[in-house]
Length: 95
Image (tube, rainbow, N blue to C red):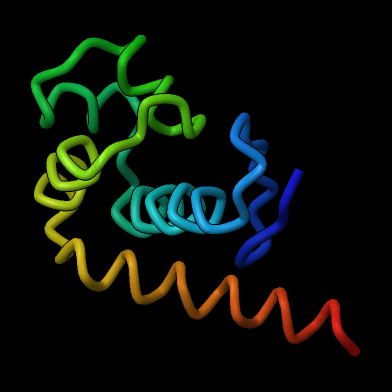
């Protein structure tokens, strides 16, 4: 379990970076008041696929690109925010 921006994220891969990317996607969904069902619809994928992506399972660049487009956010912004969050976590844990 990893907490990023106040969102608890469970990751199957153990990667803090994947967890941070997940948290960023969830944060943008929250800002836009978009449900997982709506995001799946906008990405033209099933709810099961979306659930796997949001849980870090099978989250790849193609999936990230589809979600970013549906959320109207550049992929680079999501990745930059995730990278900053991981750096913040590392800095906080080294204190």
